[in-house]
Length: 81
Image 1 (cartoon, helix red, strand yellow):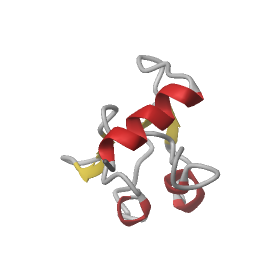
Image 2: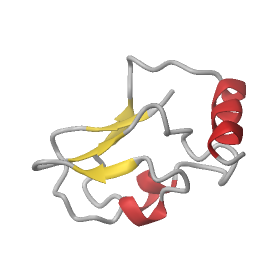
Image 3: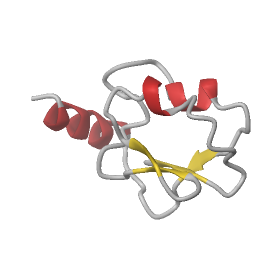
C-alpha cells in the first residue's frame, strides 16, 4: 500500500527530506504523498522513514492503493532503474 498524509499534518517538513523516492511534496496547506512513487520505503529501508520522523503521526495507509511487498519492490526498482 502506498501511504498518505491525513488532515492532522502540521506541515513541519520532517517527512519530505527522508523519502528515498521523492514521493512527498508540499501541498496547500498540507503535504501530500504521490502514490505512484510511494513504496513504503521497500527497496531502501526496513520501514517507512516518513512515519518514523512525523511528529503528528499523520501518515497512514492509503486504502485506495493496495499493493503487495513484491509490487512495492517492483515500483521501487522502476523508480531507481
